[in-house]
Each structure stands twice: as C-alpha cells, then as structure tokens.
Length: 115
Length: 112
Image (cartoon, rainbow over all chains, first blue to last red; front, top):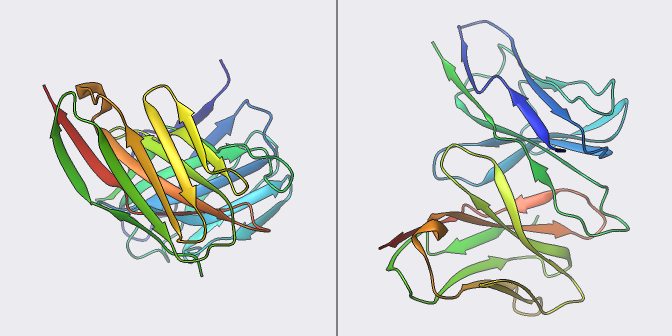
C-alpha cells in the first residue's frame, strides 16, 4: 500500500543537540510538507518542497532545516536554535495543486520531547 | 494573511444526533476548503475537499458546504456514532499557493 512513513514515532532531544526526523513517501508525489502541532492548536507549516532540490520556508521555519535530495524523502532537522521544540511533527505529501485539486496525505507523526 | 477559525472548540453529543461543525476564513479568495479528521496521536485523514467553484461535497454521512461570500464552511455529520469521536480540522488553500492554513480544530465526543 502507498503511504507516508514517519520515524521515529517518539524522539527525545537533549539540550544543544540537533535531531533529524525522517519522512518517506511511496505515493510518487512531487510536493512534501512539514507541520508542527502543539496541544489544542492547528497545524503550522514549517517547510515545504514542491520539487526535488527545492524547498521554501513556511510560517515557522526558524530553528529548523530540511533537504530534498530525493523525491521520496524530506527529512526535517530540529536544530539547537529551536528553543521550544516539544511538539507533534507531521509530514504530508501531495500532487501540486495549481492544476488539480488533490488533498494532502499525512504520516502518523513524530512526537518530540526535550530531556 | 488567511486566518481560519473553528467553532466550537469541543462538542459532546449522544449517539444518533445530527451535528454541525463550523469553520470560518478571512480571505474569501480561496482555491479550496478541506476537512480532515485526526484521531489521538495520529496524522490527519482527508474527509472532504470542496473546490472554490463548488457549494458542497458529500461522502456517506458527511456533508460539507462552502459559502465563499460569507467566508464559511460547515461540516454536517448525520446520525453520529461513537466511532466519529475525533478532532475535525478545516483548512483553506489560497489561490496561487499550494499550502494550507489550518483552524485549531473541533474535538468531538460521541457517547453511546
């Protein structure tokens, strides 16, 4: 079955440490997204990529970095500059929406906590 | 900048009731409006997508409507079931962009 796989499901970060969240999709989607969700809040966009080797900042990109070297993969690094990283992180993918109306598909998320 | 608001934040109903979840958005020039379901600790599942040229979409017991002029969308759930218990989020996609602006969601509890 096609889908999006996020790993790990739970992740703990020490002070001053960078951590990388994995997101892999086998849906052959060009566009991929990273969102952050805090308790009782909606999703906020961190970064997105509409094509390999290209990505754009979302609303809350500070303290995060991404790469898009392969179509299937869009890893997110939470750097030590992100002072409040505790949150639920969701990855999504879609067919670009300028010409078609296709919903985003989501992974099951990674919950990141500070030790 | 697009802002999306969902009312109520939480809703508790007995099984069998018909219910309406509300979503409002500030910028009426949207590409589409989407409704998602989120179970605790899980990702989002797309329920319905309404294109800007459409007024409503239906899937089983779910019906979503869109009124761009008033900046509102509603999700109607008929004959609610305990399995409908989840958080429901709406999201607006703005013209010319491929990103979504989400509301904070409505947490629904349907009791047997």
